[in-house]
Image 1 (cartoon, protein in one colour):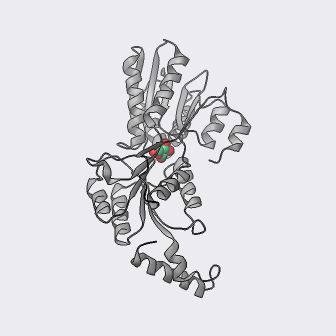
Image 2: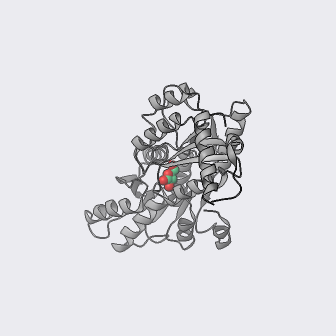
Image 3: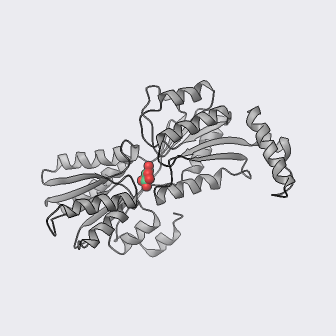
Length: 329
Ligand code: AHR
């Protein structure tokens, strides 16, 4: 660790910890100096995916692995993320790891980090900045590709039939929302008999989706014709399922087809039992890739700017209980 201020604080906390009888042998200043300090700013805990992503980070960036992790949960607010970054700059951390809530509004604070000489690594979502040198690299999913995989499944499943679609979106302006929405909108434009009935904001949460979906269904005539609900994450799918089934809409092969993104264990279980028709994977286990980038930077190298992870699609036909049991999230 190269930052004197934080190093002194860290050494003090280690000594105090051992004086109070907490933890193993006093590590002392020398051990604290060896730790790489990471200031990490997470979006929140809005979804199962997000929780798995935070757990992945906490499992890799441990003191045993040579890191001291300062973890901030922004509770879904960009202003909290900006304040956390400014705090990390004051604390002179070695690296900032940022999961940006939305794409816009980052130029100034990332410029401050650059001027302080602290590399910023983006995880999951991206940022829309004028100067790409404001961040070292981004690790995450190709959300447009995920959305296109869902659209391809719809085209294959409905083969020219009319398709009436409800679209429930994630946090407005986030990379995940923008990519998955763009893929659906381009597919609707390309299929003259696909109809987008409504776009609702589910903010990636089950509670908000249940509320907006219940309101929307109440505004329709009973047993309206709905073929697909395109849900921009698993928690949105859970809220939509709950609202649909409460109003008497069966979900699955003989009813409304639910499409979801993330493919966490809960959604895969619903997919195996047929209530969810398609689960497009979005991999939250990104910490090992972040660590590789840090190692490259620490060795004086230049990491690739974008690292996309490989992902699959699941349907009731290709899923098994063994596969679900073997997954880490
Ligand atoms: O940015 C990734 C998305 O954010 C995941 O699909 C969602 O579950 C999360 O909240």
